[in-house]
Length: 153
Image 1 (cartoon, one colour):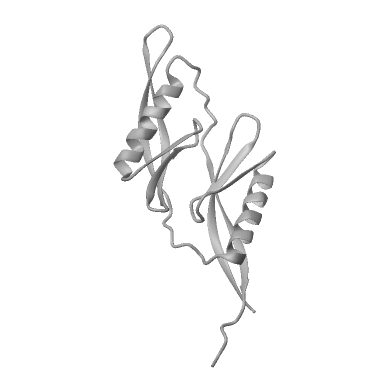
Image 2: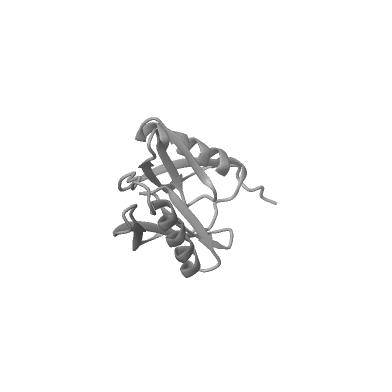
């Protein structure tokens, strides 16, 4: 058996009652834990299980962009927030994720995903307190994968 080591990046942040961790390196991969270490361990386990039965996906690291969101307060004044948004492609669509407020959306282009996210975040914030889950942490973790040696003819 051949063993290869792959490095993945986890995006982790607090979601009010738990830490949420996901990676854009493997499609639709995310989990939670009561602390950062548990969330990363759970994500590591998910990725290892996925890679045991699937080829390594060809994905790109997310692009981080600063986005401004305008919320309307209950007194009709406005408040502008600036947050990091992680944009990446998964299964032919673009995902825009704002972990600081716990909102993600998608579109056929980066611009459409960002526009949909902006609408979703502003709807969440209008007249509501800002959830402020804090800046996410980016943590790299390694996964070793054992694959059978190719048969030689």
